[in-house]
Amino acid sequence: MSTAPSVPPRPPRGRGPLARREARLAWQLLAPTLAAVSLVVILPLLAIFWISFKPVTLADLRPPAPVVRESLRGSGEDMRVEYSLRNSSQDQTVSGVVLTDTLPDVLSFRGSPEAPCQADGKVLTCNFGDIEGGFRTRVAVPVTGQGDDDALEAAAEGSEPTVTGTAPNVLTNLTFTWQNFARIFDGSEFWNVLGVTLFYTFFGTAGALVVGLFAALLLDRSFKGQGILRGLYLFPYVAPVIAVAFTWVTLFDPFSGSANALLIQMGVSQSAINFFGERPLALVMVTLFEIWRYFPLSFLFILARMQSIDTDMYEAADMDGASPFQKFRFLSLPQLLGILSVLFLLRFIWTFNKFDDIFLLTGGNAGTRVLTVNVYEQAFDLANIGAGAAVAVVIFLCLTLFSIFFFRVMSREEGL
Image 1: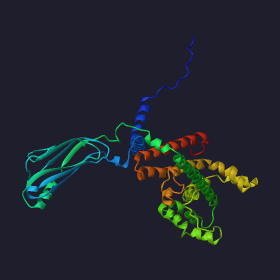
Image 2: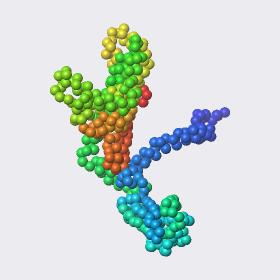
Image 3: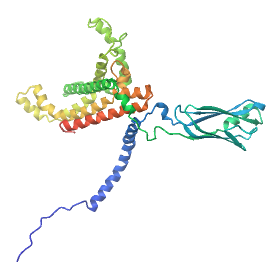
Image 4: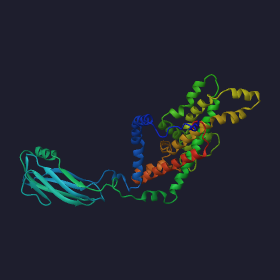
């Protein structure tokens, strides 16, 4: 009797009803988070990209519109209501401008208004058509009134006129330009700013990690007063940035700073040094400030990782006669590479975006102008919002490229 060959069991293909139901439930649970991320991160990022391709200035943030102001002038036979109309834009045309106003009961028209206005009972309508940029005009409508002048003036100005008109908005139209990016990359100024930014970011990040590692090695043991010393190490990071920046500026002031007085008395310098006003010393000083202010963050993470390392390895290394440097090089450092990589990535991104420290110390002068300061200067000092957004886009692209390079080239250690 022959038997059919047995067929090996195969796993089911595709997702079953339960898997699809779980997927729908997962998306429903993630929907609020995705919506919040979109509102907080994605939408502002898209807005910056949009504005970077627009010739937008501070004046363009308010769309062009007709603006009208009403006032009652004269008295008796010379009484009139004056309307001052202007275009809020200096270069954009507002189309279909129509002014409408209703006189209060105590006022009435005297005769027929002059063109382009016409009266219908108590309603005044003025059709100005298209008004060019910078347009200004004044329309006087003769009226008569009953009552004292103050009451008539209050009644006339209490009824606000309405004015309508349409104009293209540079923020919402579909006209795009490369002008902002061309302005940024024109000449050597941008590349100088980029070089300063990379120097400040790399050495500030690396210095904070090295000092934080050294501080963690010092406190990776038990001794009397250890908690107090740890608290003192955290002071630069938790202190208000305005307070510590002002302290540094005062300490290194060339006229009244204690640092200059000490250097002169010790014979190190013959005259006062302008630490935050000379190139390239100012860049070195703001980098040292970055290292001093942010090494406590690295210190906390590194110390926490060091205290989680198994001590059996160190005991075995002591029995083999390993020196302290050898224990650090072959035992501690491999265990710390993961946290050091994460800290380098985070600190590099944060330092690359740093604005307040440099702005408070030097204002971006004396060769300390970084990309974030350039964003502020373009957008607010020069009133060019589009160019400022373009610099912000360049910052985003630089950090994106750095992140891709970091994750592809650097080894994927623990925590990455």
